[in-house]
Amino acid sequence: MTTIKLPGLVDTHVHLREPGAIHKEDFDSGTRAALAGGFTYVAAMPNTSPSVTDAASLALARAAARAKARCDFGLYLGATVDNVASAADLANDCAGLKMYLDNTFGTLKMDSLGALLAHARAWPADRPLLCHAEQRTAAAAIMAAHLAGRSIHICHVSRIDELELIRRARAAGIAVTCEVCPHHLWLCDEDIPRLGPGRAEVRPMLATRADMLALRANLDLIDMFATDHAPHLLAEKDSPAAPPGYPGLETALPLYLRLVDEGLLSLEGVIARMSANPRRIFALPEQPETWIEVDLDAVWTARGAQMQTRAGWTPFEGWPMKGRVERVVLRGREAYVDGRVTVEPGYGREIGLGRA
Image (cartoon, rainbow, N blue to C red; front, side, top):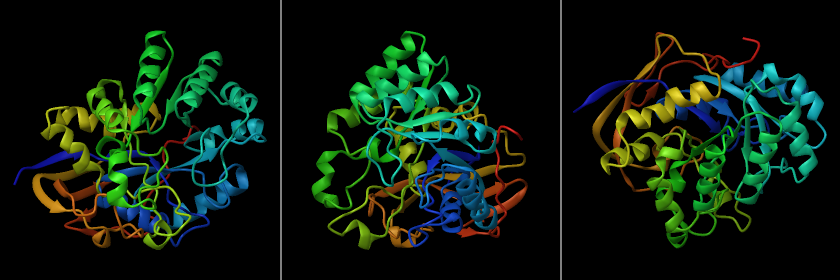
């Protein structure tokens, strides 16, 4: 057994489904899953029901998070064609602004180029601006941010041409950061027959094997590792109208550690992308007296039914995993140990606000 002490992990891309779909997940079950995966901070996306796009919906999500979250958290605001000015007024009261420029789960897709440009200009330059943007819309988002003289973060990069776009943008001096998710590193369209069409549904969609291998070969371009934890129940995933998304908080660390075993990245490189880099990019404070203990040699099998998430399944069902979180300490208190979450709902704090 090789147990090492690491900083608390940070996931700036999770869907905790509250408000509106707590049968899938809520701030309690989602943050239990986070602690089991070694994450001491998660930031919840705004494509809920109602969507978090104004002060009232932000307050609704905040009330639920403060009552239920067991690890520290942040709450994003969603961009719409109608909330350019009002969103900017809330910039210091949330984790950042999320723009959806491609199809996803929920109603926040924004088709207006004018709204994209307006949000990029209006959103304060010192607050995180992030975007679900694929291929052509990624180019549009990067250009909009550049014209506004600000940085932008591209979520869940999944294709070769997106990597090349980011490479060329940086070479031209454009401030763009990006993340990748475990399922795009380890799954591709060849896995769809095994998963089945419903369970394979995810956004961005699973790409080609060449795209998947390109992500692994260009990790120097990837600033952060996220999960895009997006739980749905199996009954929903197996239905004719399966919603897109995978649970991912509890399998992320061992899947990223595979990169170390395959000689593609150092352990230090993995942890930088799961802790130090997201803290820097998203202006998150350090969490005092916070760390995790990981048995790097522990081998276990991914079983969705045994996980903390309410989803009850994983696209990595039956996969052998190496590396297991044994203990989590959050702000000096033991929060998770040997498979048990030991802090109560409401222990988590909201951090990373511009006003804090």
